[in-house]
Amino acid sequence: MSLTLEPIATVHSCFGGKFAIPRQPGLCPSAWGTLTFLPEYRSPEACRGLEGFSHVWLIFGFHETLAQGWKPTVRPPRLGGNQRVGVFASRSPFRPNGLGLSLVKLDGITLSTSEGPQLQLSGLDLLDGTPIYDVKPYLPYAEALPEASSGFAQEAITRLSIEISDSAQAAFLLLPARSQAVLREVLALDPRPATVSPEEPRIFGARLCGCNVRFSILEDRCLILSLDVEGDCR
Image 1 (cartoon, rainbow, N blue to C red):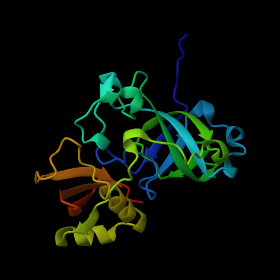
Image 2: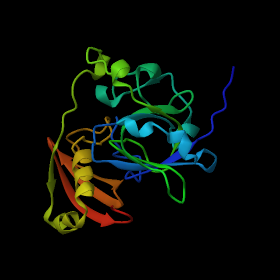
Image 3: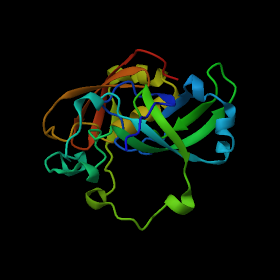
Image 4: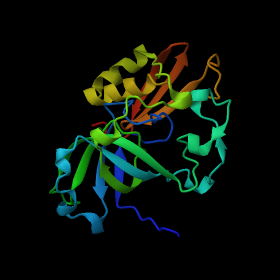
């Protein structure tokens, strides 16, 4: 039996490019996004009762990698990009149906806008423009499992310290406080590809919060080298 899926909504987020997006939701609590429903799903009645939930599950599409197809084995960043596991033991975007699942915080619902109801989200890990296929409320009594095991991803994420160069300091301080927090939280997660040698001196760039951010990483610290504002920084 086949099933045809059509998006019901689109997320607009603070992540303007794939590089440096957190690899899991909740790792960057300050990250923001707005979910806007497509015209045929803009009934406020469809959101009735959702305001009582603090978090929602989003079923979304990996729209920028879908054309590349799927792979039976992948190399997870948590294993240094050197070991392969089955795709179903990972959260790789290269999946048979290109679908992802993300648990995000529901900060609020705006029912009356020119584009219908909108969900205000935080802690998300979704690229700007991500298509959404369904929204479901999170149920802690059934879905919070503190005793669960997590295989090769058992250990907590190690975070880098963040430093800002003299040349980037003025631009950084002009950003809204939430944008500053997003940059710190995202870069502390070490967004470098797992295949990049930690000893290799390189300058990286990421589109975050309407800015083109250039940075370098050495050992356990990340240095923000420059910030160029390109869009809405909130």
